[in-house]
Length: 200
Image (cartoon, rainbow, N blue to C red; front, side, top):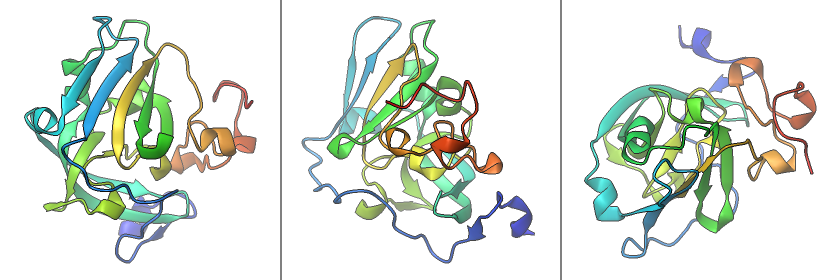
């Protein structure tokens, strides 16, 4: 039964609700790129145009998505580039522990390198065989099923490798630094020692 796969306090969504902060970016494929920077093994930053990113090996994963607003989508088919593929293409330095994913308008979401590069994590361009719509993150969104969906940033533009954890946009505004839906890690006041850097 699908309810058995729902984390605590979640409900099964009807359709796919649209939830995001700020406006939907204008579609300008000729200006889009994906940058990888920070603590890279080579020491050199990488930049992918839309065409170069589309030429990377494609992957497909079937996974759930759990929003902190309490809705869940079950069994979506996500197509795109596995985060593992990006990590192999642009390897981090040996001492990298975390990743900051940057999106349009300065939005950011932090997570451990292990969560970012997990087998089910993907930089998605399609859901259930259809291209993502602009309100759901076209041309590229991150999907990290093991974490609440605010970590699955829409409109991704950069990946920064970190040698120490740093809070992202919502994490600086009172959301839990880790965001495990099965442990209901919604808010920073629920954090235990070691869950993240101090709030500023």
